[in-house]
Length: 88
Image (cartoon, rainbow, N blue to C red):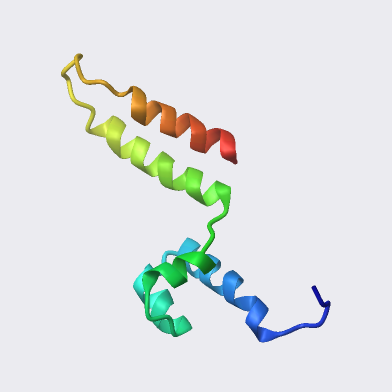
């Protein structure tokens, strides 16, 4: 890999930081000139802390709306939360 600067190398940074700032993928795709969301997703690799924050938002909403049925199995959700928490 050469050490010289090119604007092209800023594309992943632009995509990732845009998505982490709350810009939706469709808008990022349009700004980057991508025809598909899949191409944008290749560039928009999110930081582990950002992924954890997303899971914590889900957990907070889920806890607020937690069903009163004690037979509800929540183990899968709790496992996903622990995996995301340990990844950061």
